[in-house]
Length: 144
Length: 144
Length: 144
Length: 144
Image 1 (cartoon, rainbow over the protein chains, first blue to last red):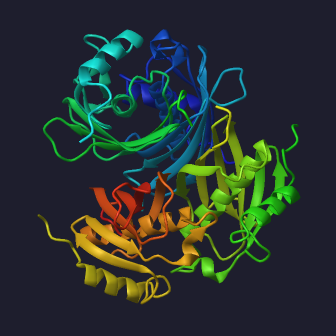
Image 2 (image 1 turned 90 degrees about the vertical axis):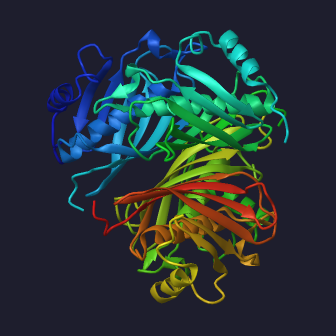
Image 3 (image 1 turned 30 degrees about the horizontal axis):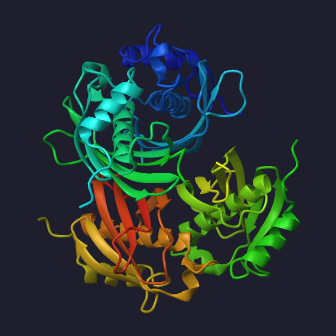
């Protein structure tokens, strides 16, 4: 199995340096596992992410999935802080209860200009996913 | 032209009553215009919505588009607080500068069980859109 | 493991009876494997499916993915010939060479009114997918 | 208003030359109107495009929308025969009756590497759309 371009620790350090506003001690996001083109990230439960009815909001799930994809891109091609999401499709499957959310991202394609991946979002300790996402990242400094 | 099922004021009152956590005086969202199945909503600029680089974050645009769709569903079929998004596709087109965001939602189909619409998100005063969204809402109490 | 609602043979018989124009001896589509909410189908290679450049066309891949989803819906909830696709997102990952295409469909949600699934399309004998699809089916006679 | 990079006739000539297998006299597709980044194309009705129940098949609508996007890309940036669809989302809105289908494509973004557009598919003579598509094209020889 091919090793990741950057480890979980290296990606966390890079994000803290490049994006201190978004990724910092206590922001609620952690990187749990990093393999090549396949990562797991966590959103620690916080009441701010609730929407009426007591379930975690859709934008919270989208943000987590987008973060997971971003980490997955780094795991495959190294530091690319200028990579941007160009397209994202989310299917909401079940209403998430009040618990930590996990997101498993897997890249389906790592091209010179585009990376495409899918993300499964689920509650820690539950098997059935609460949301499924596919997304495309554009890699600005790609060779293609 | 068919009149909307509820006016902008009626929808705002309903949202304040049903979802006081999400829609309240000072939440940053306002309903600008409501026609039948076609509405405009606004996200007033706030620094909290910025992401690294100084542009408005993707989840902020998704949240605004989702809100616009929700208001559009109400404009067509009246109060349906249990309507939920089942699917959302967003294309990010340009990086939004620091200004108010507007979202124009238009329903493409108003069925018994599903409503499908598209949303164009743009900066107030600019013509070129920053994001385009299509979304499907499920209407739980629909007759179908 | 939960058994499928219908076997591969039962689904093939049903399709031949209900949709003789689309599913018949020699149509190029076969059902390879049916588990509960997870199936594999095959599109036998035919020159008619080529597009300029000698690769299999996008609509051919979409049609195959849609067929896989349809069979997967049957595997989970039994005969529902009136189920219809409401939404489909396809990501084209690699240009497929001239060979049989396989599609693995897995349902992510089986609701009363909606079924959501994902499909991976790949060439027989190759590991890397050529396309990835998510799709939603509406189940007209659902109880919801 | 900015003129198109190529006229309808120039695009048709180019397609006949580059893709004689797909675009030829009698193939059923015609280019009706070409403005800059906005075009209309037609699929003449043919029984081969029907699916069980007598409605036009989903892949037929997807193929038409994809063709419309391709022509729209040419209208904006000139001859780019190597442009390829990377992503396509289709919402099926109504079952199309047996008539000519029209597709209006409009580009939302014309970038150096990516073009994003939306397509509305409807029956000739009817106002309500039968399908709505958003799609992204990758432009291989782009400067970015």
